[in-house]
Structures are given as C-alpha cells and as structure tokens.
Image (cartoon, rainbow, N blue to C red; front, side, top):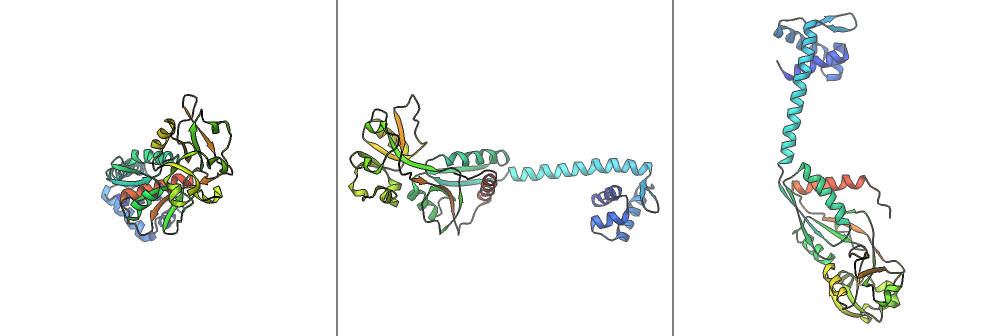
Length: 299
C-alpha cells in the first residue's frame, strides 16, 4: 500500500468526485481511477459507491479513511520531527564585530530566539570602534559588523538597525556643565576632553564644532566606552559619547548631556558584498531580516 495512493484516496473523499480530485492532484482521470481500482483489489474490498455525479464511501471505505488519516498524520509528523532534527543539528559560528550601543540588544533578542531552534549555532562577538570592526570585516575575520553612521556604505550590503544614538558629553554630576540641559560647541573649547577614537578617525565633530578638532584640549582617546567612563569618574575629564551607554541614575555619579544642535548616529548591520556565508550565518541573516520587518524604524 503506497503512501501516494492513500493521499489520492483521501483527495477523492474530500472532493467527492474523481474528476475534481484528478484536477486537484494534477493527474489524469483514467490514471486516478486505475489507482483506486488497484487499491480496492489490494484490500479485497469495495471502497466507493459510485453515483452519477458524486461518489460516497462504503463501510470499508469509511474505515480506510480513518486509518489513512491516521497514517498520513503520523508520516507528516515524523517528517517534520526529522526535519527539525536536521535544523537543530546545524553547527557553526556567527562572527559579529560591534561597537557598544543599544542595537546589540536587538541582535541579542534575535540570537536568543534563534538558539531555541538552532542550539549549536554559536555567536562570537568582537567589540571595538568602527575602524576596528570594519578592519576585521574587510579582512574576512568577521561575518558582520555593527557600526554607527555616517559612514561610506557603498562597498557593503547593509541593514538599518533600530534606534538612533545621540552624541553628547558624559561627566560627573558635580561638574559645572552638569547644570546645563544641552552642550553647545563652545562648551567643549575649554574643558579636558576624553575623545572617542571613532569620532577622531572619521572627524565626526568638525562640522558641528565649527573649529578644527586640534583646537580642543584632548587629554585621552578611547575606543571602548567602559574605560572612558572610569576615566570620567576619576575626574580626568569629560567624555564625548553616545547616550544610553553609561548608568546615569540616582545612584550613579555620572550624567550625560546631549549636544545641541543634535548630532546623531544611525546603527547599521554590514557585511561584505563578496563574503561567502556559512549556513549558520545565513540563518542569522534570515532571522534578523525577519525581525526587522516586524518593527518600525521610525526615529
């Protein structure tokens, strides 16, 4: 007894007509009629009562319908389970270079959901500023990079990630500038600055400042924000940084004030146009695309 013939049988039962069932199955009517007659011969029982327009089932046909539904349901379930086992057994690494920021939370949610289906796919993170992570991406040492614009994206494929980071100044709460709601360009000209290496590399503040960066009093340059926050806490200076990176609540000695006029950075997920993805990386990219379609990227 072939599985294909049982599916034919149930389609005839559903359609109530061999002619309609043949159309649904994309087989000829004589072929379908022959298959059903062979099935009756194999079982040694009449299964159908053939009317002028519709057919109905005999008692034996009713029993076969019940058994065929049970058999095919079990087969479909088994096929699904083994397919899931194949997916679950996929192994590999997804290598992501990233700057520090809130978009990593979105990526973490995607990875968390993904690992329920693919428990053996392991993400590897490399943290650094934009020049660092782009260098690793260009050399093929990572599959993806999370960076913050403005950047030249022409040599990459990319996806816009949720949210916008706003540049500002991280400082101690007992600093004079903490009394201001916003930080204006002239405020930076006479204070000790702990400067972002990314901003230095891409000269991001030059237009906003209105003066060359070299005129600022820069006492340190950082590429990872946590270290910069410790320098600020110890009184070395004020750190240029994105918002929402450092704890600034009631129990924190730090506060953050945004720049005015606003200076913003948009997060992107990049990958090289020529990069050959592993299966694990392709699955991650498919999941991140799907998650992005489910949300709004309005600012």
